[in-house]
Image (cartoon, rainbow, N blue to C red; front, top):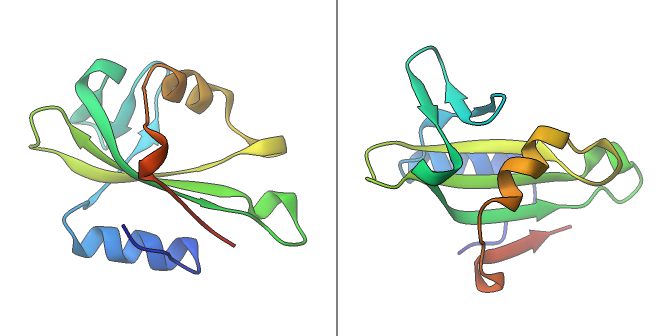
Length: 107
């Protein structure tokens, strides 16, 4: 895993490494466009990168590298945490187990 200075740098590198879909949060799933929908049991978090805003809590973000269980779909989810965290995202992510060794942070 790598250390990134910015969210943009992380997303661009993950895209180059095959995480090409741009995931968004659905009600109980991740969605990409109108054709891809993954429930929490259908995807894994391969990597995650936490970015902490030095002066603005609104800059606190997490970048997730996500792959479907079958490996056919790979993409990125960018989400805030802390004060501005999206509640649905927290519910989806709580359903998954992410070992500590996969976490990388950047300031």
